Image (cartoon, rainbow over all chains, first blue to last red; front, side, top):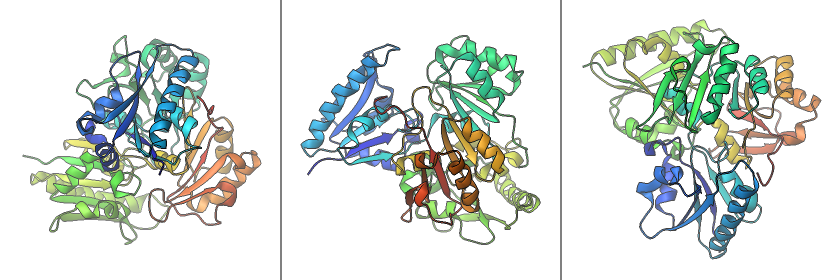
Amino acid sequence: MTGVLYGVGLGPGAPDLMTLRAARLIKGAAVVAYPTLAGADSFARSIAADLIAPGVREIVMDVPMSVERAPAQAAYDKGAIEIAAALDAGQNVVCLCEGDPFFYGSFMYLFARLSETYQTEVVPGVTSVTACAAAACMPLAARNERLTVLPGPLPEDELRARIEGAESVVIMKVGRHLAKIRGVIDALGLTADAMYVARATLAEEVVLPLADAPEKAPYFSMILLTKGADPWL
Amino acid sequence: MTGVLYGVGLGPGAPDLMTLRAARLIKGAAVVAYPTLAGADSFARSIAADLIAPGVREIVMDVPMSVERAPAQAAYDKGAIEIAAALDAGQNVVCLCEGDPFFYGSFMYLFARLSETYQTEVVPGVTSVTACAAAACMPLAARNERLTVLPGPLPEDELRARIEGAESVVIMKVGRHLAKIRGVIDALGLTADAMYVARATLAEEVVLPLADAPEKAPYFSMILLTKGADPWL
């Protein structure tokens, strides 16, 4: 019997924002897999740490720090071979993924390599988008409002055009793009409507009006921009 | 001591896609609140049913069937008064909400009425967006891709313009708007890229290419449209 490949969303960071299904799968896993970045500790593993039993096999895919795509692809190629061997040996493999596996999640690299050959199940998770909205006490979208999710690394002109045409906007992966994004939002006169949220749901969470945000943002930070839903809906 | 108002996201429908935090709050609740539509059973309550202890007080806000806004507003006005009385009496109130409270969630009606006066905590939940993506085995957005969420009731012209300018698209609340949305996607030549998902994660889940979708869609249905991420990312 070949094993099942699970892509498990862990939610935004607080361990109790994991789903019951994710917790059950991790507790029962004999093999877990997750990426690390340039040898640093894995954020995904830290969310699940209390549920990983002693003696569980851990397949670590270390992705070097690079804006090139090939090094990450090579790391996932190598990880996929190890995971495939475990699946062939009849073991289920639980892949740990911050947030949701199919929403900017690292699991997509493994899904692309393995899902045609192996039975694959994806367990959706709470995304940082709604976690940041909860942290900022900021309803995202109601009734017939549109919501646009934009990655911060997009070029300045494109960000500007996309924000201009949008209603509610979420800008992900702010990190080193903060100054550029801030410039765009300022130029559009929307700074007063924007909130900055970093490391939502963790002890070190920061929630600030964008105007008061620090100069430097971590990768796991976000800007929320809404025109404000009708207060009585 | 005044009670705390909790807006608790329950996820897309399968009870085990609730977060550990949501489950803990519901198990410990002495008062829960939720809306019903025209006297029908509450979908939110059905997700949480196994966790609601016997004897718990249930505040039900019955919203009449109407496209007008005033009847819903009146139902939430009345509910907010009952909830406020419980909070004033020192009881916490756990408001049950399908999906995520701030993502097209009914809790926003109560948040608008009560959060300035009472301590309010929002527990984010798994949204139907990522649950439908998981059900359809369809990665939503990777790397620097944009994601646009559109409500199905938007006018045809607006839907067309928004879909044309988008990368990944999620169309929510399909229901009686299915024929219109289908027409728009057909006219744009994108039907082959579109999946239809209804009642994701429930026993009666339906996942079909849009071309094969039935004539009639339930309110809890969605269309996912992606240009397809690079298969190796």
